[in-house]
Image (tube, rainbow, N blue to C red; front, top):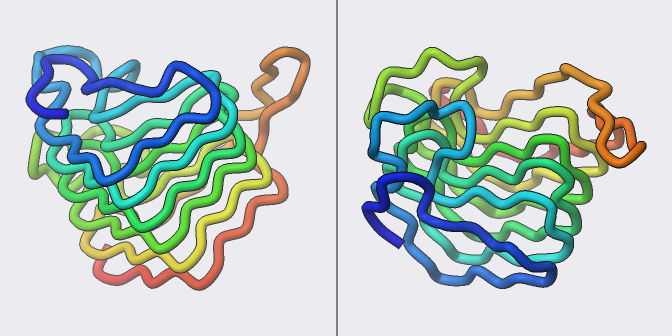
Length: 173
């Protein structure tokens, strides 16, 4: 999925599979990167797998899981030189990200970065998520956590709780 002016795409149904895909050079138009921008943006789905994908040099974030995404497994993927960040998990729950590589995200390779905690993996107002056994090297921030909550969605207050960040290697961020 390459060189789309806005986002490259995103799952729209529960139980999706994204495997061995390359997301490169998306969101190159002069648009606001703080909304729907990046290689892939997924919202409001439950159940899915992102495995062995590469998110490379996208405007905005490589992958953005936003607004009530749940039960997603991210395994063995690489997030390299994306403008704002590699992976952003926001207002979601039960997301597991393991054995991924976050390299040189949010460091100005694609465009100027003026956002909070740009870098490898960002976690915001989400619960019961796991970030384990990942490698974060040379990002603006390795792993960052933000709290603006609670942010209610469908009567559920989303704020950071029950998250596990363990066994990651973060260097030169």
